[in-house]
Image 1 (cartoon, rainbow, N blue to C red):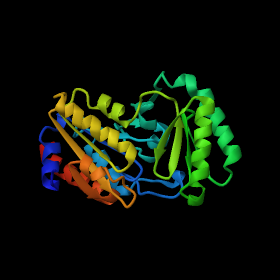
Image 2 (tube, rainbow, N blue to C red):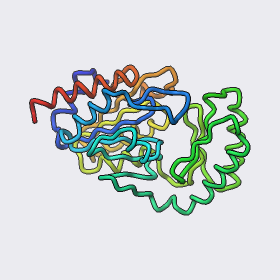
Image 3 (cartoon, rainbow, N blue to C red):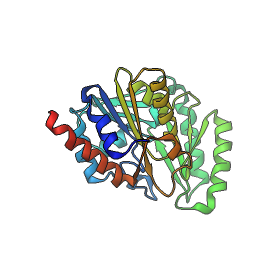
Image 4 (tube, one colour):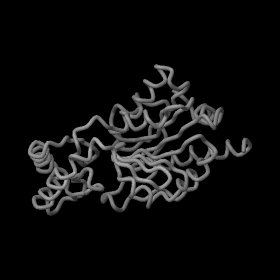
Length: 262
């Protein structure tokens, strides 16, 4: 485990050879009931803007579409990996992994069926690539939503991804936050990722493997504490911070530590 000072030291020792990545929901943005109302802490934008250009690469790896991320985190120079890596945005150019394109019709059909069956739940269509069914605002309907998700996945040849109070129907391809992070840290010496949810465990695992394989010299895994975090999170990381505000405080401290080096 690392303490805060050691974490900051690891991130500023070789800044041009360092990549720093973060999750969005629950990490840069507080957890909210409705997905469209999630906005980052204002200080998060300032911290990310201060890190871009000072570090070798700064990015967000999220289950959100890159269009949503670009709108809500308008920081020039950020690399965005959305939908767990199924789409990316670099320098304003959106790219969709070609492996998921054949499933867009199936995703649309599943989304239409979910809309028809789940009038009071939230059906979140994600850039035509996946669809998430939420029950945070109607917790009593969790079993109903999960049963329907299983039916639709089987009917349309899609995979299910369980997240916090939600299930995503997505193309059955081997893409997750781990594969996204693995690609984004390639060529760097130090790599960091911050996250809070079950989907982030794959990213932490990817960093651990990259360090074990000596593809990176140092992995820095930052867990963001919340009442809803998965039980496995503390054991998967090197440092725990208290919620999005704790993460922003850490990132801001990194910005301050980098300034004398500019």
